[in-house]
Structures are given as structure tokens and as C-alpha cells.
Image (cartoon, rainbow, N blue to C red; front, side, top):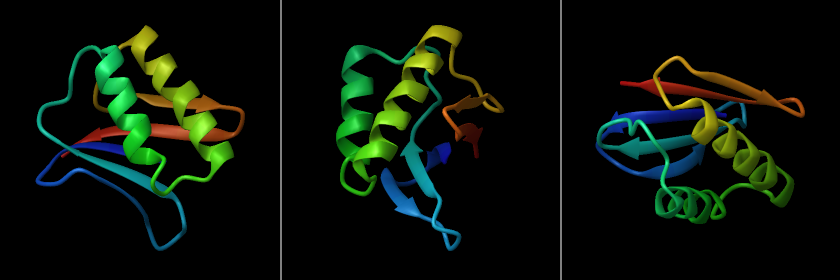
Length: 86
């Protein structure tokens, strides 16, 4: 799963390999607030399967604890979330 900040749109899509990609507009926040976390999960629920959504939530909670920055890579239960800024 890729988590990309800086694009012109906000969406959750699947790339040709079937991996989920979360595209977010704006600056990469230093801290994920409760509201931002809820909005990301709500957005992701539109395309992620239930088990993927649980893993995404776990990854986001880890990002909250460790800070969000470009290049951050989180791996939990076999799921990998990588933060890019572009």
C-alpha cells in the first residue's frame, strides 16, 4: 500500500498490480489528528476489503506514534505501508 501526499486529488485506488494506493492532496502533516485518521479510514473503506482496512488502521496508528514523514515504511502483519511525498 502506498500513501502519497502532494497530488491534486484525494482518492484510494488500486494500481495495475492490485495494490491499494491512497492519494492525498496538500502538505504531509506532522501529526495525524483523530479527525484526519477518521477521514482517511472513511475514504479507504470505499475500496479496501475489511481485512485490508484493519491493517491500514493499524499502520496509521503506528504512523501517529512514530510521526509521518516521506520515506517512512511501516510493515504490520505482512502489510506494508510506504509514505511518499510528490
